[in-house]
Length: 143
Length: 199
Ligand SMILES: [Zn+2]
Image (cartoon, rainbow over all chains, first blue to last red; front, side, top):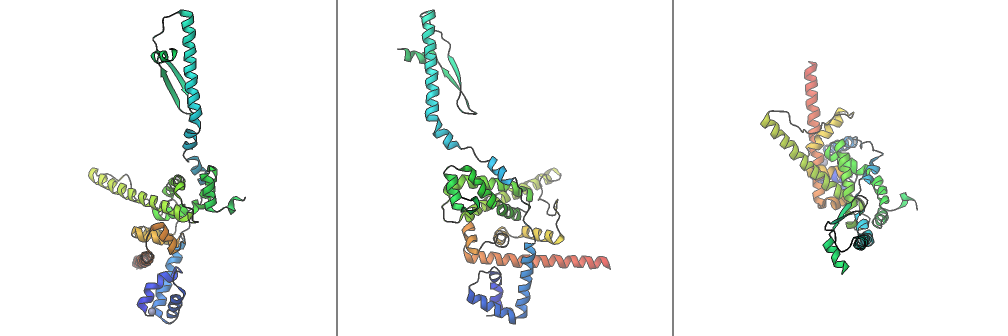
């Protein structure tokens, strides 16, 4: 093997990525050739120096910081809960307003109030939903 | 079962099945390497910490797309590589923009490249190495860092970067020659200055 080829293979040899046959050829050349050996020693020194750069000191709180920032489990929150929760919430509002109307009609008489009935509902932990139920809508249910 | 004996793939399955807290085992397992990688690529220890956090959040979001083949390491390093290169490009633009503004308004730029030998004790030689690493073309630097600091095989580097093995061989070989030449030049010029001062 000539010097030119060895020069080309030296880095791969250093990274232990050469096949055994080529590896043996490079090694035997390095034993005999002063120029290539000096190149090889320079390369070894360089990688030795590179490895002197130590990894940064580990932050023991790093995993905790990452875990605290994981996105909320939206899938479970919106797929499993709502089916039951939202249905219950709406049912409760309609029933309560319906009965309110009934008792109002019974006590006062035929005249209906024209104001909309607003109901604030706590839908989720953080989400406050404001539901507006107008009397005209409710009238549909009364028939 | 002991957490430490679980394979990466087993932990990923557990996390995807709803055991979100198990993700912490993966963070513990890989944060050191990921932070080391980003630090060497960016040469900015403080930024590296915050980029690494973003990387793990991204890994978590992308877990459903991981195909379990015992190559979790390649999967997460691919994400780390992409996010770090994006950050570097953004940073390059910011530094450039800041210089333009500074030139326009005749003021000191608001953003400069991070100091190399800053608040952390570093020898002159370490400083030389870091400066020269930063001066390498991006692809050469990436290949060299994955090989020398993360000790990945060429095959693993191929999985992370998508480059062919011959390309990886060439990039690493060129990076080494270039570093060697530049460091030697600097040492020589320092000697010249030193001997000149002595006279
Ligand atoms: Zn030779």
